Image (cartoon, rainbow, N blue to C red; front, side, top):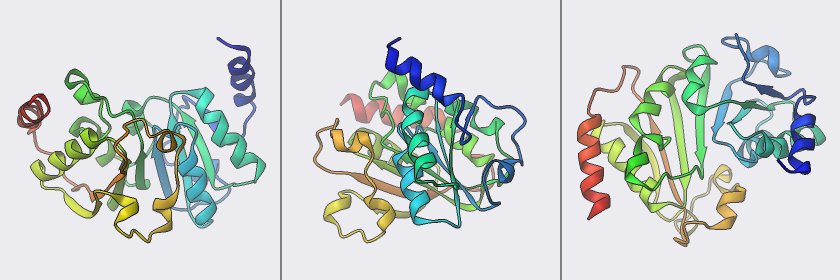
Length: 234
């Protein structure tokens, strides 16, 4: 491991706005932040541009960036401490453990911004909008809470649309080409490090905003797999 990473990991241990693989946090997030306020998650947050950006816009809400990579979290956490943004924090853990940290209904919204699209069909279940993950989000998301997906990957965008259609989820808002379709919500103007890299080279950004039902998603996962395999292998 490089010297820079070692320094960042050591600093991360001292940051008051970072928790690393915490225990017994369910129902206690009001004590972690300065104020008890509605809580929004940024999953696979990377450097935390969305958690920080949203925190600047909304002092009346709390924002928690979640990622397994401590070296990346350090960037957003350092910014939030420096400004300061007492309504912005970070948690280091795996996304598939997310339901361990929150009470039912404790999370108001979830943002998934430029995650790894897991392009290989063999890694389909690792896509953060796969029903496997949506069932975890259902356990912590408040009724009528939103999930936001922002991605430059046409594969992840079309995959998520297929999930929404198959499981009959409520699609609230959609942009196939965000910056060319007149989106006026300032939250959508925040750009992450990975968005600026334009890894997909698709020259467009996709956005989906949808809701999950309160009852667990039905078992249609095998049907979804067949649909996606046929579509992405053709």
